[in-house]
Image: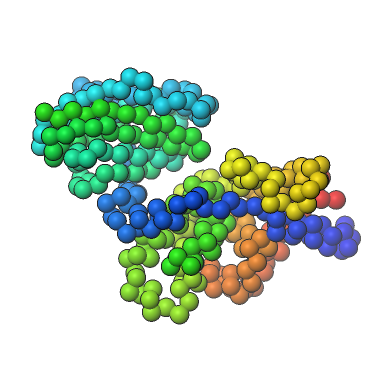
Length: 178
Length: 166
């Protein structure tokens, strides 16, 4: 190939590279990032929780949520909130809720965010209303135990949002406190 | 720090090549920077310092960020960017051709190693000077030049083979 051809091709590539697009940050992203950075309470947790095998603690499972095979193929699925499962926990008594996630395929680098109602804490994360983990799901059923503690006699909804690539799904659990 | 946010976000994008990872990296940088505010206020060029910290964070977690690679064009389309903002937006046919070329460039960039992709992104797309890349990455200018040369040669090879360039 002649030098002239190479120079012309390089020029063409350079022009393409200069046009190579990049979306701007979402509106409000900087503000949210600042808030997260200044408040450790909502800081993203980097520790990777191991989602244990389904059979390990099935006896303690009181809420089972399924993510069907369509999770990976249909990002338009509505939230699975038509029938919200519920659990009743006693005030100031830790109670473990096992969430079961079933996935049609292994998911690497999935993000799981748990949002807690006011007055409910997750053991090990005092004062935090939103906790995020990066994790991997194996094909089949995966178990995530969450130990909840009610500090106030008021319940609410726990939200668990699972994201992978550009898809996500949110599940709800009603928590009543006695 | 806020005046540097756009520059930092762009850098995060160019390093990681994907929105979610870019946001993650940006967030991690802010968390780290807030832990070093005393140090930051003493620095003459906080923007450059922040860029270096971001680059080091990226290298530390490169394996994780490398799992997802360039999908820039597709994400632009998903975000509604589509052809808007591309040069020559008055001619739809030309625009489609341009978009297809950018998509093929996107695919070609995926085939580069991270070190080659990052150098070509920073130098040819973002307009960083060789010296600035050296300061950011700690890689000698000679090595940066060599990587840039090889990255372009590889892009030329790929894009010529698929007919993007002639």
